[in-house]
Amino acid sequence: MITMNKLESASRIQLIVFLAIFSLSVFSQTPDRNPTTDPFLSPENSALILIDYQPHILAGVHTMPHEKLIQNTLALVETALVFDIPIILSHVGVGLFGAKPFLEEITSIAPKAIIIDRTNVNAWEEPAFVKAVEETGRKKLIMGGLWTEVCLAYPAIEAVQAGYEVYVPEDAVGGANETAHDNAMQRMTQVGVIPITWNVVPAELQRDHARKDTEPAITRIFEKYLFHRKLSN
Figure (cartoon, rainbow, N blue to C red):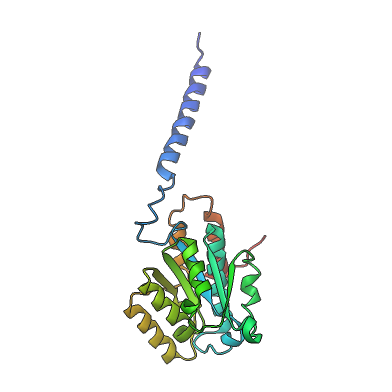
């Protein structure tokens, strides 16, 4: 004979199973979109490219505080690492005449990034650079550079003309002065470069809070670099 306690216990188990299934159905992550037709940045269609973040070039930036620019750039690199998207770093004149290389603050956290040394001011005129971009297989390029009006504008414009979508995080780049920076942003947007800010990148790559594999790390990036909270290890 089935007792009342057993009936209540069975009912509780059924309720727990129902709630678990309901929770999974309501809060399961959205399926990934086709990376070739997705209009937004995704981990499958994007690459991060940073050009000439070198000490002597950074010294010529007068459009935003250097520490803030570096912090915003680090947020981009950490985001790329979370989503395992390709990272290309390019500096100029290191082998040619001993220029100081890419900022160690950035290279130290991305040891597997591809580093391209150039002689050309315009990175798109450096065959090794173009080859590295092509080999990522990605058509959406998150591109930053110093200075905005020179080492960023030239390859960004050429990349658009070569069929890529180029996204420039404006708060992670800088120019010699406000006029130079603003003119460069105008020049780029006129040919199709898309201006964004650094925080758009982690938000767009994450896109769904139910993607639990990456959500905690992205939350920490926002807390560290946007809200400036001190985080415990």
